[in-house]
Length: 151
Image (tube, rainbow, N blue to C red; front, side):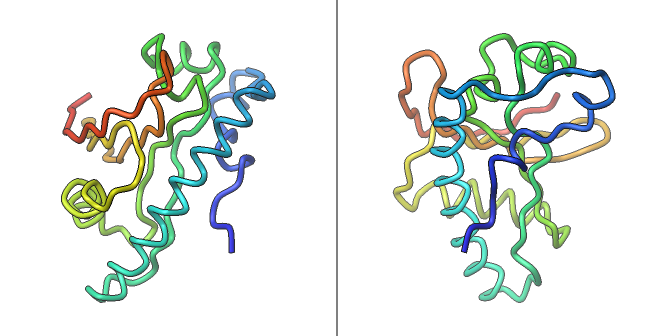
């Protein structure tokens, strides 16, 4: 059963509010499909982790996926963002167990042998999320980086 869709990855309330077209090119759609494969792996492993630790629902919310160049600029994203290439998603666990989700991705999932570029634990003054990048936009390589960032 699929847990993620391209529709979820391209949905943006900011784009809607600002009248920005956030429809991806055919190439970016292919990248989004690749990214969904990684997200499905994360969801399956998170489901097992949640069951083992009695954490409730393993559902995962995509807070930011694909961003057209115009949308990326509007939200203050870096110019070479993997979001623009369709190779990234920002995630939060629906069960509210953000600390456990961050720890799971950084210490468990990152060592399970899945292909990924970056897992970045991100925090702002008002929110927390995990940025998951599938490939590096410049060359398609996967660096297997995992770190924290305050924005």
